[in-house]
Length: 294
Image 1: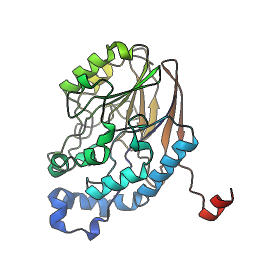
Image 2: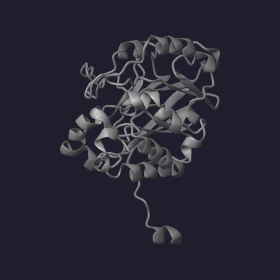
Image 3: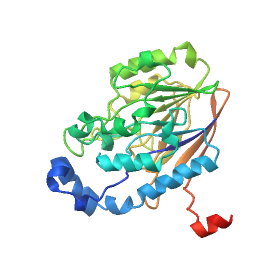
Image 4: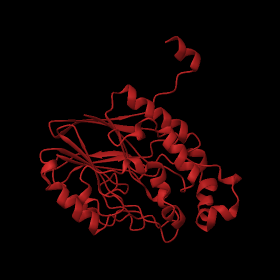
């Protein structure tokens, strides 16, 4: 089977045109990163780039799209709506897509309480092994074909303060994952585990405490060897650490829509193993006049 893995697409609303009271104090602080830090400029074309990626998936013969979080800039309702529209038609069916939230999709208590992520992507949360969904639908399991399984975990928590963007899977989900991996329906399958936060950085070192995945070692200990892969985002660098005898493949998708570093992974599996991986860039959209004459 063939998969497209992208992440950190950060569809960004026009924050300069928003009333400050609606934004809330957390986003007031984030405005410095958005405007002065250049994030708004780097993600100005994020929605269009995401549409290109969704279109590429069809042209590449992809069976399933995996998005490992940070659909939005700062959890605004309109950002979720636009991200979902850009990913159509993939996100219409759980058989075609697995999408998990990132820390930017859980940016405020209000976004979590009003279930903004679920209102746009909740149709993908049905699990093929629902009795082991222990925390707001996670882990979500998708059994694909005879030899594959995709497992979505949630590591995103509302930060106590902007900048404290570490992730925690938690014991409930980790224990559920342990039981899942021993489940007879997963026997012999390639298992692709999607989680937002990175187990470690591109150089193989743990991320800083305020940004990393707190229970990374516990996660990796459950996934020994090349039958498994962890697909993550959060760190805006695209990289692959091949599996070892005791560790899974690890794929960082980078930021798939960031200007100048757009890209995604195309992964292929065969007979319960990862068989190939390619890092690709989104193809440009053809002008309507040219497309009409093709």
